[in-house]
Length: 146
Image (cartoon, rainbow, N blue to C red; front, top):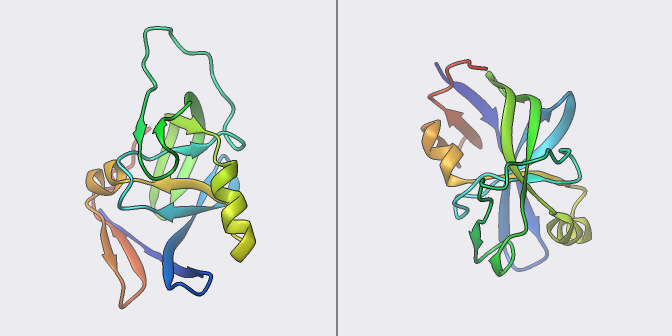
């Protein structure tokens, strides 16, 4: 099963910096998701997802060289319902971090608020194809699951 999502290409400033966005729904709220092929992990904005208590044995350290330097201060959260086209996930445990520094940069140039950078882990799992000419994101492995 697959789903095809329209991509919005946004430029930041005059330096020819292009950013790809798709629309999704997190817990009933329409949101903007940044396609970030350079990110290893898909993470969510802590301002949108409530933190859950975690087992002290769970390790939430993520190395980062792009979104911030060094280890990220992250926690876990649960998304009750996530929709991206025909892809649906329920009660999904996700990594959350503070994306306010990312969103302040986007606010200077656009009206976008990044709820989630979609990383390579998600793109690989769902056999993603980015079609720049058609401005589409194709997700080919989207078995509906809980």
